[in-house]
Every structure is written in C-alpha cells, then in structure tokens.
Length: 142
Length: 144
Image 1: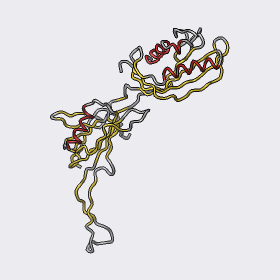
Image 2: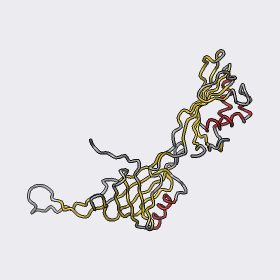
Image 3: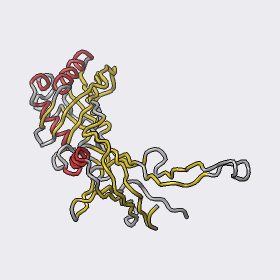
Image 4: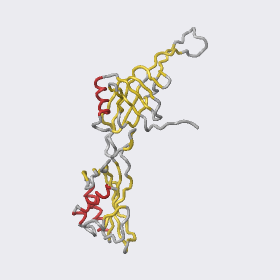
C-alpha cells in the first residue's frame, strides 16, 4: 500500500526517529505487517488496522480514506521501545501534507499509546510499545 | 421470489435548461413526515348517518424531501442548490431509482439549504437541503 511506503520514507527521513532505529536508513528497521528476518532492533512494524473510505454516496466510495494506523515499536528494553514509539508519535500526530509517493495525509488523533510488555523476537526477547493514530488520507491516483 | 431494490445507484436530478443535472454524491433522499398527504376535511354534521366521521378528501400536498450528501465543495450541482434556494426558483426535479427504469418527477423549491453540515473532526463533511414540492408527484402510472 503506497501510504505505508510514504510513511516509511517520512520516518526514515526524520532524525528523531531514524536516530533511534537499529538501521537508520529504515531498510531493516521499518516493516509493514511483520518484521523480516534479520530485523535490526529497535524497529517499527506498521499495521493498517482499518482504513475504509471516509464517506460513501450514490457516486460510490470516496477517495478520501479515514483510517487507523498502528505502529509497533520493538527494542531490547522497554524504555528504548517507548522512546522510539514517542518519536514516531511526535513526528506524525500533527503531520499534515504530502508523502513522498504522493499520498496526501493528515493525522488528527492518537487513539492508543501503551506499553505491551515483551515477546519472543528473532534473537531473544523484545519489548514493544504500541501506538495507534487516526488519519485522513488520499492515495495518489484516487 | 419478492422484489427489492437497493438505495445505492439512485439519482436526484434537476432540470438545467434542456439537460438534467445530477446532484453529486447524494447520500440520502427521503420524504419528510407523511410524505404526500391528502388534506381531509371534516364534513360530518348532524345529518350524517351513523356515529362515525365522514371526511371529505381535499387537495393533496406532495410534501417535502430531505436530502443530504458528502460535500464536494466546488461541485456545481451542489452549489446550484444554494442558488436555487436564494432565488426561490421553481424547478423540475426527478428521482431515478436504482432499477434503472423507475422515475418519479415533480416540481419544487429548495426550501432549506445547508452548504456544509456535520463538521466534526473524524468525519467527512456533509451538505443538506430540503425540497418543497409544488404540485403533484408523477410516477410510473401517472400523477399521484
């Protein structure tokens, strides 16, 4: 989904976020849906939780989407995971504009911001902070 | 098997010269109250047989239609509603149902107009209007 790619580019290009990633380019630290093997912690996994059209009419669904996007931040310890999650939140919560691949997006609400404890990672345990943001966006070509 | 049709695919159009202009991004179209209503005059008097009222059907008032939709701020069909409202212009309208063949037509004024409605943070902005029908409705088997 283009919006995910655009968000990855934005996060990788924001020093406050990229400086906290295991791979500051984002290549091995920014993922959609699931982390790849060889993910370099700390890393972020993005989920498009629910991104339906913002409105429906007799002319069909709108190109404008109104959705919830989740960012799971993983790190070897809880404070590092939290710091990464906060940097993602602070970068995006008031962001409004065009992403690199053409999506126009406007974040307007933080719906969840919590620590989720630890879970088994690829090489040991990783701690997770969960962040959910709501946004209106229109992908390129809509 | 019974017959039903979906609301999706229906259209509201207004006559614009020789063309019909579809109101864009319509979401809802519904008669207000009882819809078309016949005024019933009470002609009951002491000579009326029995113990029941005997009303006399009077004129039919075709009533009003409420409409709302998803706002497209620069769309000419939506903006035209506002112009018709301000000018008090009587225009011809028609509702095309989603079966593709059924048409209901009437004349009416745009009696109320909301250029924007329901502006809330987490929703798409809407528009709304109300049509005051003038004269009767005409449907598949004629005037009703």
